[in-house]
Length: 591
Image 1 (cartoon, one colour):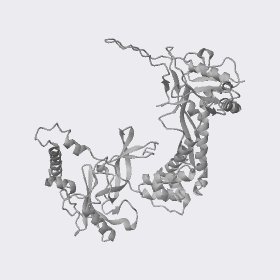
Image 2 (cartoon, helix red, strand yellow):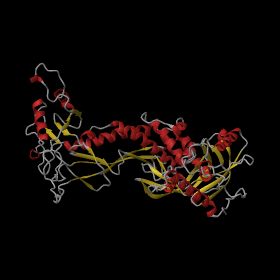
Image 3 (cartoon, helix red, strand yellow):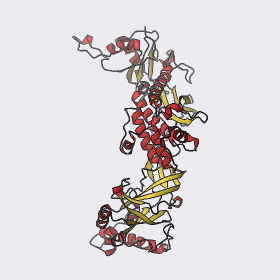
Image 4 (cartoon, rainbow, N blue to C red):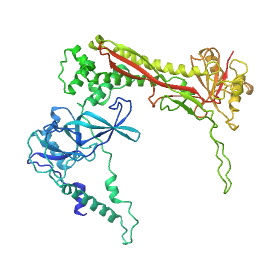
């Protein structure tokens, strides 16, 4: 194998046993990493993090600890960062190992090549929005402080590695408080890498060439494969980064709020912490001196008197995590008969109905496709904003009593689910809303309403099924709508379950044709003996619902009252629901 390729696959590192030093690429570029919600701007969405090397403050990094896997224990410390510098979009560092057994063990692994990766621990002071990537918002750390480096066998940043002897750092000895100046010429730093890549590409192409020396098919770009088929670059964050701490604390608080949330991973260390302990830790991580025994002064500062928003944000994060779990468990029945749609804003949204797309026609050879137009009678549905809230007093916070917020998250989940349920079922009251054709949702002219109310029976149910089966599209095309749900109020539940019960008859005339044919949905929002047949909303959406921006369910925000220092908790929901088509629903007023 060529010598160049041999060195590419296993170049000796810059580790010096005598000097007990090694050189590393601490940051290999912007290092994009997908992070879970909340984003730096507080939005409840996953996001992409990037690091700008030019915005890094290395004053704390130089002299900072070298650890194993970001483990904050004494026995995990193996040395310190002796020098560091910024080179373009990279950060390079030299680590000097101590004389501990752990350092000796790590140096042995570095020599063997079983450990080559490194990762930064850091705190971000300033984020800037930097567009989107794959539908996720991108936030770039433009002012941040790395404060430790860790060694790991599986670095999340594929380019953050112990440097090889082919690419050492300049042999300089800067002052202890200075960042070394990079005086290595760019062509000296990059020339060997480019030559190595070119040689490796040539070797791959040569190995792929047929042995009879006939010209091979054009390569798909060995150089491109070498340069571009690399793992995604991501970067680990330190456990004393306030943003990382807040996420773990929020998970722990949420688990105390709701049994449906589990505190896992980093969050487990905060499970027994009191809110005042969390507030003190967040203030300390911001570099502030705190007195953990003066809870009142501590909470006043944590609630924003000095400009920090960590603690109110922590409460909001925890409440939202607990709320979402409880809200999803509520599972209101309206979602079975209504179709979920996207609302981008609070403007009127129009939705297509069954039959809005023109029917198919044969296209003869040389003929033209016939194009139709969409109906102008599209139904408009508009989402609206709804909100409520409570106030948690300063005394409750000083006493570390967050039971009100804990109870509140559960109550919001129940209230929001019930509110949405009532909003949708209100569309089925009386004859329903007026549609764009000037008729009510349930109207004899639509063929989806019984002329006379009657109790549930095989006969009346058969008439409802026949009505839906006979529905046609806007152009008269038969739709053969398949009913799926029998929807009743509390008063008609027994009759509904009896009429769809599966029985073993003594003779064929006793067979129940609707046994097991429909799912029974019972709602307290349906009055008296009224009952409905509903199609699967995936086939014929008659009622639609949704949230603005895809933010499912209610959202909690927390702010501090400047005068009272109490916490104001606001629950808001941006929800819309409306009827868009009559063809998937049938009403019988009952008797």
